[in-house]
Image (tube, rainbow, N blue to C red; front, side, top):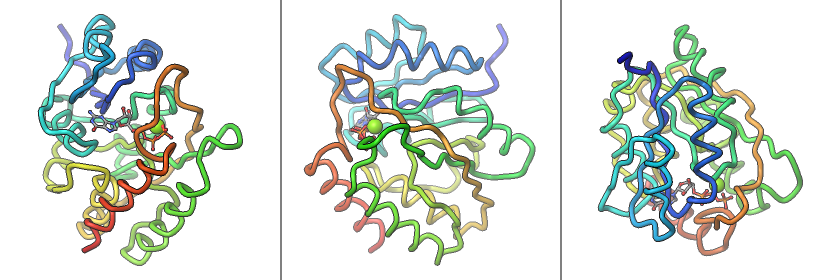
Length: 220
Ligand SMILES: Nc1nc2c(ncn2[C@@H]2O[C@H](COP(=O)(O)OP(=O)(O)OP(=O)(O)O)[C@@H](O)[C@H]2O)c(=O)[nH]1
Ligand SMILES: [Mg+2]
C-alpha cells in the first residue's frame, strides 16, 4: 500500500462530536490522520478509530504532550498539526503544505480569520497581539499563534520543543526564529468549534489562564 505523503496530527481531548467531520476532511485531502488522545471520556478514541484514523494514546496530559506524541508516531515526511474540534477545515492545509513542499517556508502557519463575531474572544485576541509583537522582535513575523501548522516532520522533531502543555505553540515559534527558519503565514477561516464539544482553552477564563501560565513559563 502507498504510504500517504502527509500525516495530520490532531491533538484531541473530548472531541467525539467533531471528529467524524474533521477526519472526513483529512481523508479528502489525501492525508492520514493521527489522533492523539490523552484521557478523553466521550469515546473520542473509538470514534477516531472507526473513522480510519491512527489513534495514539498518550499518558501525559496536555496539548504539547499530544502534539509531540503524534509527531513521534507519524512517519510521513510532511506533517500538519490541526485542532480536532472542527474549528479549521482540513481543506485549508494543502495551501500551507505547498509552501513547505516548494521550499518557500520551513514552517507554514495559519492565521485565524474568524468567520463570525465571537469565535475568537477578546482575551484570546489580546494575548495573541501581545505575543505576536514579542515574536516579531525575535525575527518571527506572525500575527497569530495559530493551532494550524505544516512542516517537515524531521525538522519539527529536531527543534526539540520542551513544553508539553499550552506553551508548545509559542516555544515552537521562538525556536523556529532562533534556528533561522523561514516562517510563513496564510489566512485560514476560523469557525466555531463543532456543536456538542467544549472548549479547553480560549473559550473559558480558566483555559485562558492556564494558557497564559504555560506561555509565561516558556518565556522565562
Ligand atoms: N490530547 C489532548 N488534546 C488536547 C488537550 N487540550 C486540548 N487539546 C486539544 O487541542 C485542541 C485545542 O484545544 P481547544 O479547546 O480547541 O482550544 P481553543 O481552540 O483555544 O478553544 P476553543 O476556542 O474553545 O476551541 C483541541 O483539538 C483539543 O481537543 C490535552 O490535554 N490533550
Ligand atoms: Mg479550538
